Image (tube, rainbow, N blue to C red; front, side, top):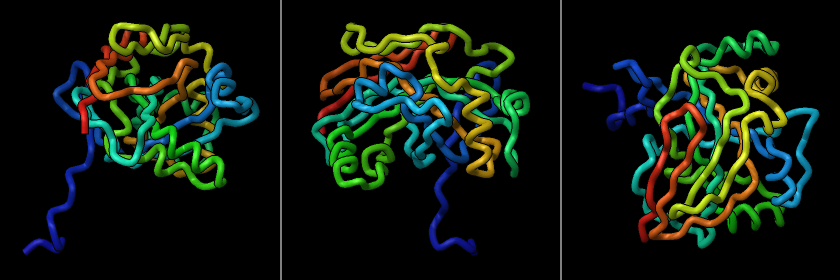
Amino acid sequence: MSRFLFPPAVPPSLPVIGSPQRFPVHRIYCVGRNFSEHAREMGAEAPREAPVFFCKPADALLVGGGDMTYPMATDDLHHEVELVAALGTGSNAPVDRDTAAGMVFGYAIGLDLTRRDRQAEAKAARLPWDVAKGFDRSAPISALTPAERWQPGNQAIWFDVNGERRQSGHLDDMIHDVPAAIAALSALFELRAGDLLFMGTPAGVGPLRPGDYWQAGIDGLPMLQGAILGR
């Protein structure tokens, strides 16, 4: 007889380009306000001294994108396209930039979907953002490309809705690059293999509505795409 009261959920995992094995996901961390223009469009200043972090539950992933029903409890769902770094090793102590860079297994394209109306309410009341950021299927993500095949530099990052460009930028516009973000995160959490780090979004965030078809891209990585269905 199983020692569990009911069967435990299967851990979320990602396909890996060029491998039959999958990448098991431990936690999802996100960098906030990592592009200056996006911070300004949200009415805030970008923190340059240290990154700002928040989390999503690992089972918020929508692997491969695809169709998604419009979420409950919002009338203002927003898109935020992001580079995602996946850690292949962890650390129980703070690490420096060089060590942090060597911890990355691979990269993907992700969306930080946001219930913007719930976020605005939380900001006004000085409450946490969990309801705005951590809902079901709030983190669409592509397959992982191993780090030996692709490295971030000045590649373009973009997001289209119904064939029209909404977001456009370059990865070198990030205030905190991947090694810097991992090093800062390691001073706050014990990092583990399987952790994902969403690296922030360029300006141009906006609403997604039922019937919308979207495409997300970063030069050199497989495209992520999907559609928003009615409730």
